[in-house]
Image (cartoon, rainbow over all chains, first blue to last red; front, side, top):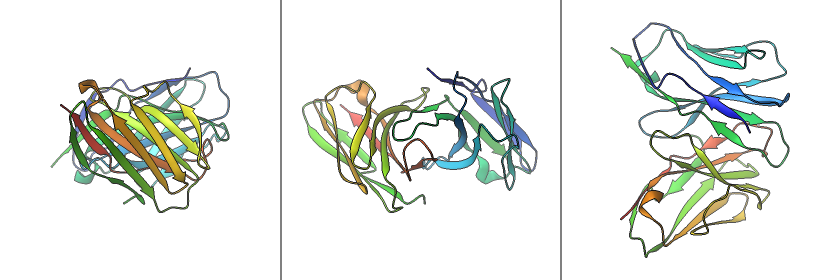
Length: 116
Length: 113
């Protein structure tokens, strides 16, 4: 079974600073996806960024980027130039690539607060 | 907005009531999911439907009964719930189960009294 660990329950940074959220996972699979989801206080979960395990290049979406270390099973999220709207719960998630029947396994989340 | 809607947004029910949660996706996806989100716990996958067929039941008690009449609609029928079932219930959809990211609805906050 896969497990996802987010060791930082809460973090806070000043607006415009850079922050890194950590995530580690455990799996014996070779083909999988990793995701970061954001859940703002309004509760709608939004996909932030996605990484395919076979890709060596780290995914980037505007101010959001990941540091994917496959051998170390580490998948951290870096938010640059943080904004007040980045305040949210952030969930790291793992999904085995399995057509038609898969599990999306989530970590317990990191509550990020951006301080004005 | 993600294109996934859920109703109602809030629900309070007694342990002897029967109620249903509704999820609708406007994305043309073929996979739909129910998750339970409790405080300080990881999201728990409950059910997966792919092309209207249930492909996953994650050992969910029978007091939760899913229904997927078509690829756009998903229901969760509730009866004789327990107070520990109080949680945020999230619906999600994906183009195809197992190969793509999921898009989540806003959730239904359920309180069982």
